[in-house]
Image 1 (cartoon, rainbow, N blue to C red):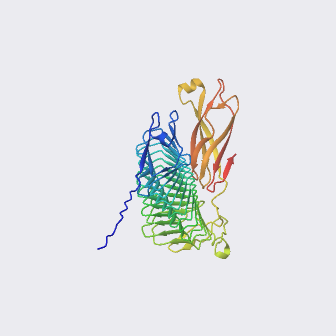
Image 2 (cartoon, rainbow, N blue to C red; image 1 turned 90 degrees about the vertical axis):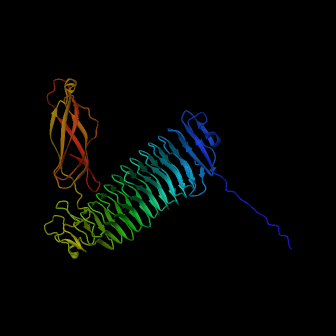
Image 3 (cartoon, rainbow, N blue to C red; image 1 turned 60 degrees about the horizontal axis):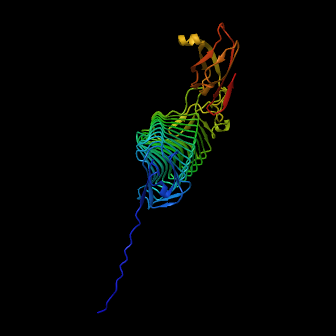
Length: 477
């Protein structure tokens, strides 16, 4: 009988190490991985860390990675940097990869996450039930979710790059309210910016969203959000609203070169789509499903889309308002040869632009026809002493009213200067904001003046400014 020698080799995975950063003399474990500045409560990493996660144990601490790497064991490998229950913590300049969550902020507030590179995670930066945080200048890639929020409110997400993720930036849950997602670069994800399951009252603005294989900006069951001044290009769909995403405002976006739909609304009601440019898409604007109703689509530019509008069965979607606001501009319906006559010279085609299951009754004859100099005027002021102490201090309050005499809205109306005689000086800092003023509307603001004793009247010269729907600034008078 032969004797066989069997060699048994047993290997063990290297155990992960946890480092605690604390507000004490050594910064907890900080001095084992870097240098600690106790006065600034800052830990500066001086070496790369492998199979290591970091827990921030106190509020007000700064962790500065200085470009050093923090590497885990894979997407099931816990949290790279743990901020559970922490507030006023800064995490910056780290290169994080191969964790379940790269940076996890839970149940805290006022944290700053900036200048980090996070890749190969389940969630790159994950903010849950944590409010008032700033997430800026980070790069997230190759993750299921690049930057994700769950039931998190009043956070600022700005200047980040999210690419090559399944979801670039995600807001989810009804508690995700009042967040601002702005000036981010979101490209080559499946969905670029994704709002799902209840986010409300958020502003998604001035983001560059391109090359996403599903939708650039995608809303599912998300209500009363403002999607403004984004560029959505070169993907499948530019901007998509579905599953009872109601009451959202979609304005001033540039949506171009998408192979599917530029802007699409499905099973969603009471949305406003205005001042957008949709060009070179498979379909410029699309609505479908019978439950898509009561949406307002007007003052948009639809230029050289393969199909300008695709409107399937839907009740009461409106493609124009009464003059002078009117409807939309269609590049294939702006000349007499195309059937657009303007015999009365009002800027609208005399016949509707008709498409499947709908029509625009007041199509504009030229692009951005709804943008022209606004007719504003300053009404006679009302002056009063707001209190006895103001009277004795000679601080006179004056109610100025600016009226919009035209039919088109004026935006960001401000009183910008005030020159006065008789030694009267302005107390209220300039500019004085009057806000947005609808057509035929007006807005009043109170301005306070220092009036020398013995002065019963004086002359004042005032200047104001306003912006039209196309972003053109006008100065008055």
